[in-house]
Image (cartoon, rainbow, N blue to C red; front, side, top):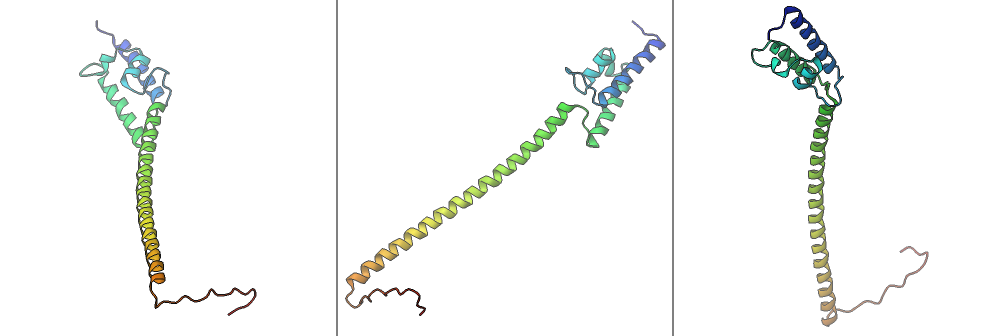
Length: 152
C-alpha cells in the first residue's frame, strides 16, 4: 500500500521528533537508543529504515548524530553509559590486581631470601660457638659488668 505525500511528511516529522527525544536521553524503559526503539517510538515499521526503503536516510542521520554525541563523550542511553563506565572500571581493577600480584610476588621472594639469610646466619653462629668451645687456643673474657650512669 502506497502512502500519500502528507502521510510521508507526517511520518518523517514523527521520526525526527523521536530521534530528538532519544538523543536527548528520553528513552522508554523497555528501549534503547537504537533503530528498533526509534521505529517503535515513531510508529513506523522498522523495515522502512533499511535498504532503499523510504526512511533509510533518516536512519543514517540518526546513527550519525548518535556517533557524533558518543565521540563528544555524551551517551544518551544511560545503560550504554553504565556499560562503558563499568568496562573502564573493570580494566582499572584488572590493572590494580596485576600490580598487587606483582607486589605480592616481590614481597614473597624477599621473604624467602630473608629467611634463607637468617637461617645461614644462625648456622654460622652455631658453628662459631661450637668452634669456640672446642678450640683450646680461644679463651673467653669475663662478661663486662654493666655500670649505671657511667660513660666509657
